Length: 263
Image 1 (cartoon, rainbow, N blue to C red):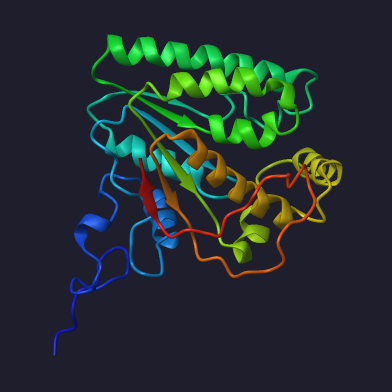
Image 2 (image 1 turned 90 degrees about the vertical axis):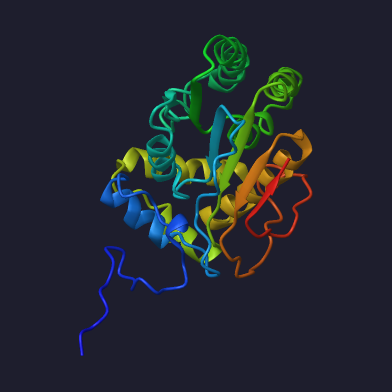
C-alpha cells in the first residue's frame, strides 16, 4: 500500500491544521521552522491575521520570544506594500544602548518624535505600512517604570498612537522556556554580564522572575492604553509569582490569557 505523502513541515495532507494556518511558501525555511515550533497546543498559528486597517504594526515581547522571526514573517506577508521596517536597535531598544547615561530620557523623547513622523507618513502614503520591533510597551517596562518622571511625556506618545491605524502583537513564552530561549548564545559575554547586572540592580532573584514580570506588565499596560492588540500567550505552568524587582513593580499582575485580540 502506498504511504500518504508528507508535507515539508512533516505533516500529512489530512492533518487537522488547515493550509491557512501554515506560513506562506515564500517565507524563508528557517522562519517557517521557527514559527512551526511556536504553534499553540490547540493547533492555532502563532500569527493572527493582520487587520486590514492596520498600517502601524508593533511587535512586542521579552527577549527570546521570537520578535525577529515574527517580523520577518510579517514582512513577507506585506509584500506589495511600502514597508518601513525598524529593528529594535533602530528604535533605541538595543541592549548596547542601555548603559549609556541619559538613554532612558532620550528614548522617550525620540519615540515621541517618531510617532509624529508616523502620523505624517501614514497620511501621506496610503500604501505605507510600518513594522516596528519593540516600541511603547518595551519603553514602559524598561524605561518609564525606572524613571517615573518620564511618564508625562510617555503619555503624550500614547495619545498620538491612539490616533493611528495601529495593531500590536505581544509575543510571549511559557515560563519553562525562558531559561533556554533567552540565552542568546550568539551574543557576547558583555551582553550576559549586563543582564546579570540589571537583574541584580532591579531586585530580581533570576532572569525567569524578571521576564515573567515583564510579560505580565506588558499586558497590563496594553490593556490600559486602549490600543488594538493581539496576545499570543504560550501555556503558563505556574510557579511562584514575582514579588520584588523594579517595583515588580507595584503593578497589579493579571493571570495569563489565551490567544486573543482586543480593540
